[in-house]
Length: 418
Ligand code: SAM
Image (cartoon, rainbow, N blue to C red; front, side):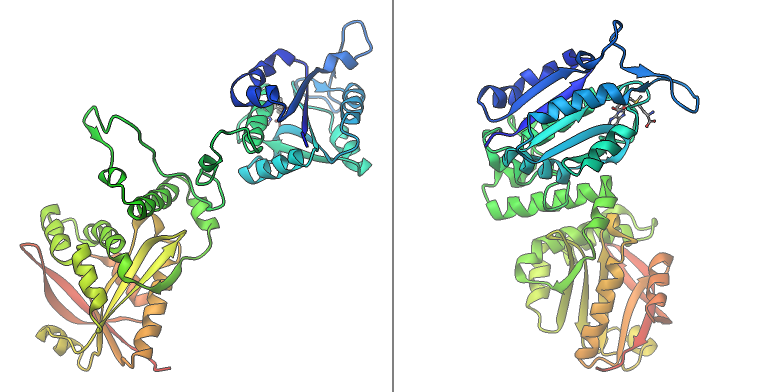
């Protein structure tokens, strides 16, 4: 069944792009009917007037409801047998989203009608939307394509039609290209994309994309999509809900190494040279080391995952502390919280708190009475976080990062066994 789109405007020429590209081809192939109408065809005076001064005063002109009423009655009659939606573009409308585009595409797929009423000047008399909604025969939606003001609804109509039409079966040659797009079901922005040549102006395509390893490529893309979304649209990250905390698996080693490599240097005080932090990461936080940690029965790694990407992790090392300084500071300690890191873009979203809460639960289940950790003396943010979660400063220790000796506080807390 072919759906139909009707656009009513005082500038039909503005909609000429609907002849082009995918929408133009879809029309030519009979996948979609699009008719553009001149609102002035429904005027009754010699000047073909569509607007008048606003009641209540103020600047600008308002579009007359009687002209719009005649136009929409006639245009909507063409879709009388099907489900009909009138879209009124306005900066004061509900935001137009991919989810709405999908709903409207479904309406068209079912043979429905979409009528777009393009306003100009100060907009259309409010009774037009009210009237059609009140008939109960059509759905009226006042929609905004963004938080800015255009001169008229034509550009908004083009945006809406293009976003909806490309979702119709047969319009896009390869429907797979719709699957991982920004604002799709994953709720993420798309990962960055690359093509030939592999090197251009000193910039190389990421090596993983040339590897042919589909699993690695998929993980890399998911990682970039999540990072990009956190950096550009934290609101979308919030909409994903809380991170899921789970025990790490052997297959997480590479992802853990990446997260560790990004988080460790940021937790070091500015006095630690980048080369020393990098040396520590290479020695202690490589994928190979994580593989080892994950095989070690005395170590327990928990990860926080959002939309399939690891955004934080903790590591619990069960056993009495080896370091003399720690044994003196926290006598009877049964395990170390040896790592607790969350990627920068995910701070302040409850990820670290959820990870730590699960880790404390796990330690209690493992019958640990006292848990200790070392935290750099200059890292006050981390110390505040641990205090908030019941840790207290009990002593000091020295800690080696690359070629440097760093000074840590030892913090500890007792646990209640389940
Ligand atoms: N006075 C209106 C207001 O402040 O809400 C703005 C009217 S605007 C100058 C004229 C027309 O442009 C609107 O009736 C609407 O059709 C269109 N328009 C402007 N900005 C838009 C947006 N962000 N989304 C959708 N349509 C928009």
